[in-house]
Length: 134
Image (tube, rainbow, N blue to C red; front, side, top):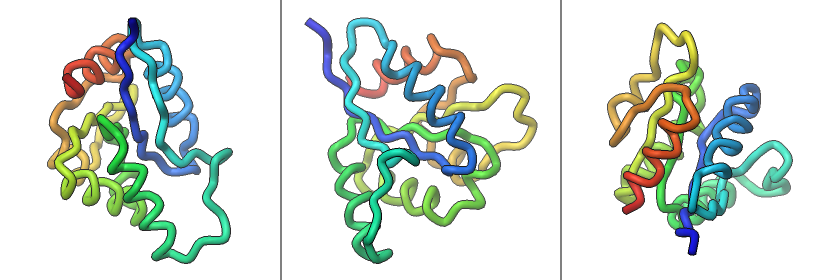
C-alpha cells in the first residue's frame, strides 16, 4: 500500500518549469501517492482579494505534509513566496529546499528556513520527501 504525502510546491509563475519538474519528481516517488496542494498557473485562484488569497494559501499549506521550494534567487524576490515560507515556518511544516542546476546564488530566505536542502535530482527530492514526512 502506498503512503500518502501532501506537498505544497512554492514557485513563481514566471519560473513554472521548476514547479512542473518538482511536481513530476514528487508524483513519481516510489510507493508514495502525492496530493499536490500547490497553486500552479493552471489552478489559479481568481477573483480573490489579497486577504482572501492569503487565507486560501494558508489553508493549503496547513494541509500539506511538506513544503517544497527552489533555492533559486527568484524565491527571495517574490513577496508571495516569502509569505508562503513564513506561513510554513509558523506552522512548523518541514521545508525542503531544492538547488536548481548550475545555481551559483541561493535565496537566503529559503536556505535559512529549510530543514533539508538537496540538489536538483529526482531521487534526492523523492528521498527527502519521504524523510521529512515520516
